[in-house]
Image 1 (cartoon, rainbow, N blue to C red):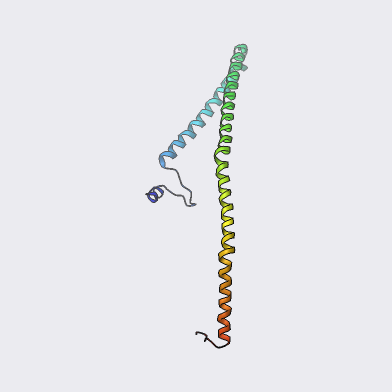
Image 2: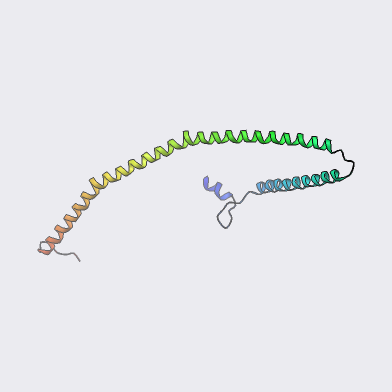
Amino acid sequence: MEAEILSSQPIREDGGETLAPDELRKRKRVVVGVILAAILILALLVVFVVYLVRPGTDTQKIRDIFIIFMGLVSLLLGLSMVILIAQIARLINLLQNEIKPILDSTNETVNTLRGTTAFLSNNMVEPVMKLNEYLAALKEMSRLFGFTRRRS
């Protein structure tokens, strides 16, 4: 089942996955929308500047509207900062209460494994190696004294 899911997605030559055609169309639409919005904002800015440069323009009303607009932008930025601070607080809480215990448990497991390997090395591997050394020496001595023959 998992192999079927993986094989149904197109893969680029460099090994990375490519997007499905409908997802690619959605992303293209978003990019085109952003570009069109930027062009529209730029055109409105040009029209606004041309309107302000004309003689006889009532700049006091435009100034008041601009001040109101700046107040709304400040309110939006303040709200964004509050949301950002709340997200940072949630991240810190996650790190302290979820990730840190996992890391502590992993560290404890690694220390236990380190002790287990030291115990096995001292109590099993070394005696077996010494026994093999003694048996090899005994075998070589019996061959030297002629008790056994060398196999060919």
